[in-house]
Image 1 (tube, rainbow, N blue to C red):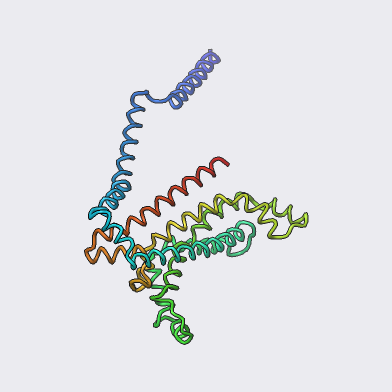
Image 2 (tube, rainbow, N blue to C red):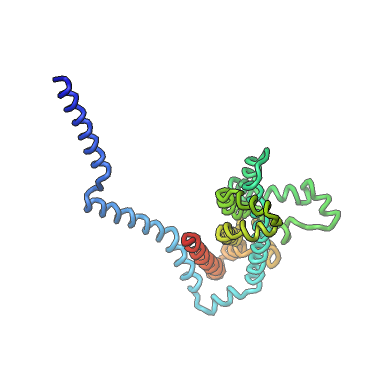
Length: 297
């Protein structure tokens, strides 16, 4: 009698377990699931439209508000051209420096293990946690006339603060971790077995990097360069503090937009802003193409 009861009890447990699993696995009603999906999609699309698409439309409409002639005059102004040249120059310098540093730092931290490795990785991420304005103030207190290096720089006639080198330095700082953060996980996941095998076979360091390491990281490297470029072109805070807002000398495009807007030249400000919008769209397209390539590999 007790055996029958225990078998019946076991069957009930098994049956309840199967029913519970079916309840978890089986999807909800098709109608309610479809409604929920449409609601979530609608909320997401509305948010993207209000926060991204609508501001871009406003920029373009305001830029062309006084006609095409006023628009071309604003973007061809000599101060605008100078600001664009400085923005591109600072971006190229920042991307070049951070690409070289990012490759070396990610290779060091992913292929070698030493004391202080984690601390070094944390220090590289400091620009993510420090306000760009604070970074600009730190550079002024370091390289300015009242800074602890001010006397040395002044004696050797080297000007960093309120000059182009300061703009480049600030841009490098705020974009410091981008290339490294894209390369490090890829190199870390790759390991170092292939490099060690190639070294045992007599390959030199450059050959190992070119034939083994680089093919694994090339898309991550390009992605990091694109992110670094986008961040460098739009930098405002640190550059605003260290540049001195010298028109035609240390003004980048974001700073030039601010000056035009403060002078109530609204149309010109939006016209110059449209240049940044166009550059951002181009970078976004390049980023999407690189992401697609990475997924195909």
